[in-house]
Length: 137
Image (cartoon, rainbow, N blue to C red; front, side, top):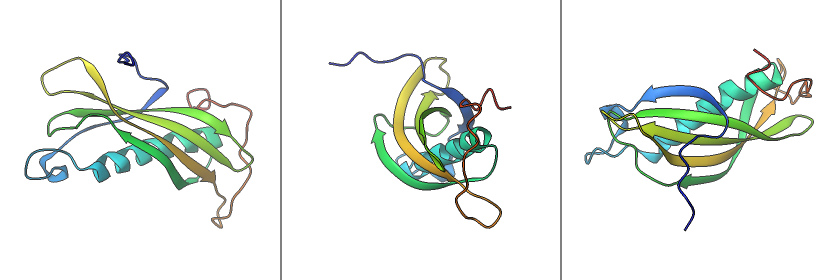
């Protein structure tokens, strides 16, 4: 059995608290909410890396490992997997700290691909001087 990780990979991109409006009647947060929050985090991260606008072109994989509940804090971490001429693949990990707890748990992970676009919404080359969103701020 794989050992459970206790530290996220990548850079913190977003934090949000799961609210009742994002849950089903049993209090479980919808998978679509998680996917949306991860995509927002990836968009913030890739725009910093690409130094301009990016759009999501695919979600290559998603693994829902544990549930997210109302009151949990969702933290999305991003790391660059690869950068091409106009696109980049980003690993996004969703971690939570449960309500009234300080321990982090990995709950969802996915591989997202984004394309850098210009003002006419056409693909443009990614400026690759720096590969880390943290360095490009």
